[in-house]
Image (cartoon, rainbow, N blue to C red):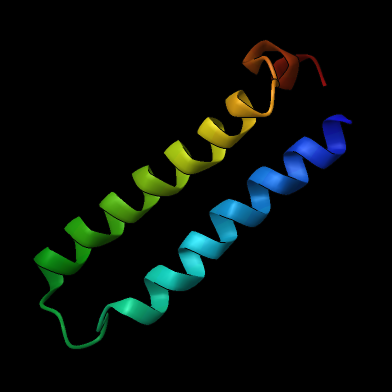
Length: 66
């Protein structure tokens, strides 16, 4: 069960990151806005991953024990 929960969260996060790479002109954006956008994408990916784990019933302390 734990493996399926982690897999589901990983797939959701991966889907978001694939969408993000295709939705923005990364090379055509100036360095500072691109860095801010990258930071926002990393934070959003983490929120999606851990949010999916919490919604699927994983206790975050279980991640530390495994």
